[in-house]
Length: 297
Image (tube, rainbow, N blue to C red; front, side, top):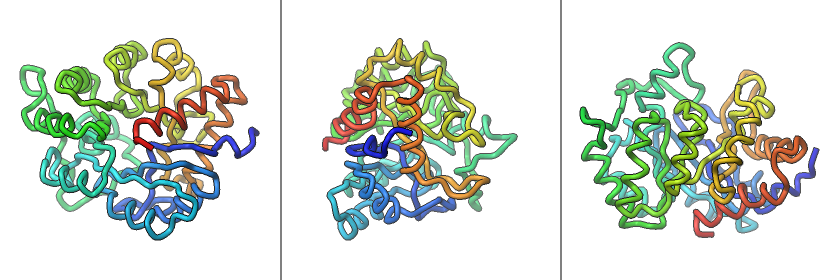
């Protein structure tokens, strides 16, 4: 295996650490300790139910020993009122850097996991009301336009597409660009969204970054994942390399026990290099330089 020095300077844009409604493999304090030991520059904490800004702020302030940054985010699911501008504003004023469109509340997500369930979901008393954010004419609903208007006024924020459908994302990205949203990241388009390579090519041409998550690849986590490395090879042909982002999307409990996001990310990056999918220079760009630029660090 490639040495763990490959993790030095990493910025993981997609980490699921606790506390959470969902049982996670570690909490954000433990994640920070492991990230600092590995030499991370920073990471973003994502939770499907609650904004992660408070835990990110407190953990960074009181536990950071080596300067690793911890960023919070907000996911626009039912538990926060979906397109709730008051909650969005509060979370961002407290330091949230990424605003994710609906994930577990997305109609596409609910339909795609109807038979097998979802490892990152938890049943709440109120259940999940499916969210589909296009109107009968196939255009974005007014509530989404208001969210985009807010993001356009806050150019340091990153809009992430969540678990929406291709049709929704096809409307979201160009409208966001036309309204002046500066930073857009497509969330693992190959998982749940089931976007084609041509879809990804189109979104990248519109200026979006493409989030490629290690947890989804069969070579990285064979018991859970089904995506082959050959998909990333296809992306390399159609997406500018400085618009590809490598992240872990890790932190779940699996059948074989907890999976550390740091250990999974190390396995992901080292396998990419060992299998000659990417060079170390490309890994540095996609896992370090580009996400650091997006976060402004």
